[in-house]
Amino acid sequence: MEIYNIAYNLYVQDGEHEPKQMTNFTPVIETAYYPLESSQDDIPAYLGIQLILEDGSVRSLTLPMTSNLARTIVAEEPRAVLLKTGYAPLVQKYIVDQLSKTGRSGECQRGVYLPGNGTNRLADGQHVTVWNGRVAGSTKLEVPYMIKPTNTYRITNSIDRPVPTLVRTLLENDAALVLPVAYALLVSRRDVLTAEQHPLQGGLYITGVQSSGKTTLARRVFGYTERIGIPGKAALVLEAVSTEASVRDTLSENPGCVVIIDDLAHSSSRTIEAHRKKLGGAMLRLAANEGDSTKKGKTGKTDHRDCTSGIALTAEFVLDGVSELTRSIFVYLEKKLNLTEDVRPALIGAILEDFADWFADNYEHAIELLHKIADSPDILKNLRVDGADEFTELLTRERRIQDNLALLQWAFVCMVEMIKSTVKLSPHREQALYEKFWMAVHLSVSKQVDEFAKIRTHLKKGNIAHLLCEAIDCDEFQLCRKKSKLFKRNGIVWKEKNGVIKQVGIKQTALVQFIRNQNGYQNYSSRKITDYLKDIGCLTINEDKSNTVHLGKIKDGKRSLPRVLLIDVETLRDNAEKYELFAEQARE
Image (cartoon, rainbow, N blue to C red; front, side):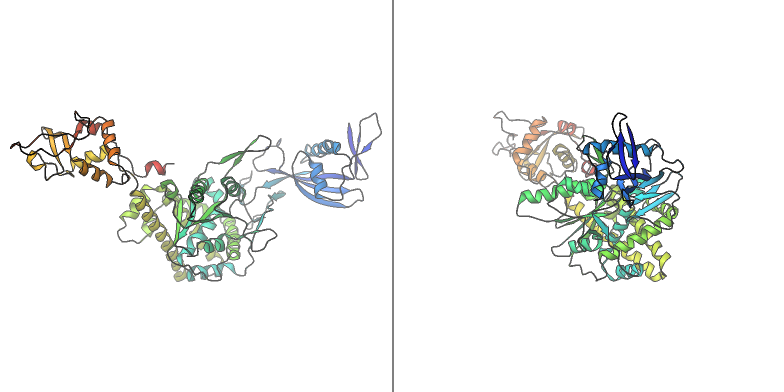
């Protein structure tokens, strides 16, 4: 079966019948755009097609490679006609046959398909940074290329002299502005962080008192992605009632941008509030983990969805899991935030453009700075705090927090380098910028310390056996050794050998109160505590099956000794288990 064109119309002839017209157009592939990692035999991602209509007019189309290109062409060009739907496979064959000649003289040429925002490494080792639909910096490509089109948003950047405006804005406004700006710059280079083995492991968590300006801050910094056709309408803002699936798709489809999850607020409905907390926790994990999520497509093929965006949550409350806390980069507003008029999406959008250009032209230097700062992060040396033990403990124990802050430091350092390459920045103003940054980091870590202190009150130090062993060793109960003193003491050492306590009797009220005073056991009932002691076999049960035992009378025989819980200390020690605070949750 032969397919050919006559006067720019496609015909088919099977050898036995007259030629039949299939279309009123002829598609000619000019360029086939292949993914960066593709081989010679792979299928292109897009085709640059010259569509020649029967009247001789020409229209250039750039179309995704599909299994029904004829239908796509007819949908894109109103004048194009496919005379029968049954001819679509033949038109497809006509187009695909041209691909086999790619690279030959006079035939379609091979181009490169660049997948949206990010930095790509070409086969010749050249690094190409793409931002907002263009190749950033002074990079010149020797091969034809196309960038994955974005049809949902555009990045607003219409502002004059953005760099000096940024400097003035950061210095004039509260330190709370600094980390969101640095986070926007950091996320724009997220793919580079992953490639250099320093993945971003956190999202921005903007919280504070009611009506403090949490949403305003998020929208004025991260609202630079405007919905196409609706100027001023931020495209990547999702409400806290959104489904996990919709948020997951948004995070995977908008590389280098920040998605806002707005208004994680308290609710009179427990169900709604629980959903908001669940969504916030799940999205923080997704945005902070390098592992991708998978989704079954309509064809049954598994679609791998990498998280390529950043996430900024605005919330009235703080998520109470250790895992969520370590993934949160806090911006805490303790009072109403008043931002100057210069803080607006167009400024951030314009700065991101300039930052992409600077990064593209200073790639090697930026990567060198990344490893210098992030390989051995040392946030503490830049934080001036009184009583820094809590800071030291937190940042040493929770390395994820320090790693995230080090990446923010890198983004901020690169931003200052970009500023200095664009405008004259006096040493005084440069120092003032860094002081703002470290003040913001200090406030962020302070909030982390406070939240971990709250969680500590709910985390168990060990099981009940461990707590009782520690209490006995430290003489918490002030145990006596003479029966006559038991009336005024909480318990008695009942058996002891060579200075080693073997058995103790502790008054039930004192023991229960002690356990309830321990973190994580505040709501334990007396019965739950004694049932535990019976279950591990350390409690001596009285003949009447009561938990407490009667130790007899004092020597005069007139007064009975108080009843106690008689505990075998060796059994208690065998069952003692100390918990590593935070370790299990943080590992999740």
